[in-house]
Length: 135
Image (tube, rainbow, N blue to C red; front, side):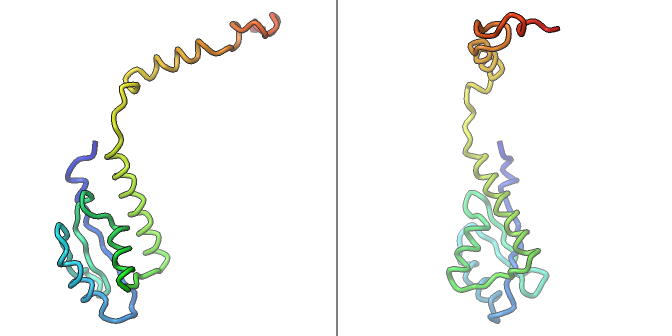
């Protein structure tokens, strides 16, 4: 189970240098969204986003901005870091939806029973007697 405080994310989103004024436009656009806190980053072309995974994902926010004509910084380091964030958030969301199956409590017993029902080694009739004994 995921700790509720782990669902709170604080991410930095870096925009490309061109077109100019993207940070101000993004601040104006994103500040109107409910359950999202947005402010300027330390870098001049960055915005810091604070959100919960219950409401937003970084991939969803980036996609919405790109659809509105914003251009993100596509340097190698930024692309890789964005992909890592997307993967981590996707995994966290997936893990929140996994139900606890009753078979997990008795998983060992299930494999033991499955092993006993299969033909193998000493127990099957098709194996010649000389191969059944260890020499």
